[in-house]
Length: 116
Image 1 (cartoon, helix red, strand yellow):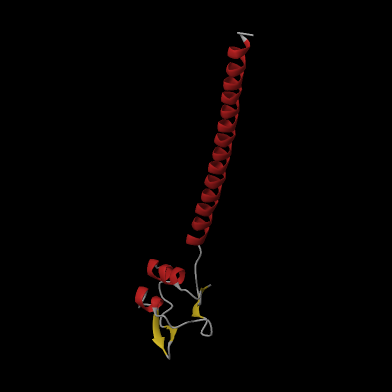
Image 2 (cartoon, helix red, strand yellow):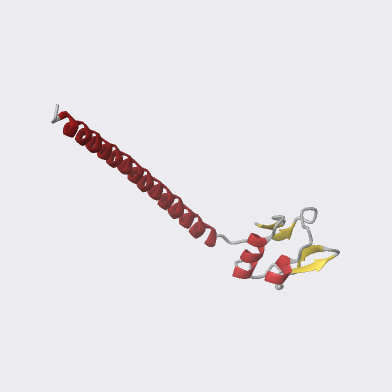
């Protein structure tokens, strides 16, 4: 009887500790898998960026019925855009691989700028 008072709490504490370790290892495995998944996604994005950087663009246009007239593109890249009748229009098709043009395209809230 005297030993039962000691053995039961010892078993309870040790089994709780084992459950804790089991949960901790499951969390660790899950976070490692998500890290590997994110790294794979990031490497495939980098490969896609490489492919895109090797493309030669020939046509720049603004979809006028989509354009909201905010002027972000003109502010970011005045070399290629200007405002006319509250919509953006293309003024130049030179240097279509410029970083300013890429920023203008990425920051257009209506996604009205098309580069093909």
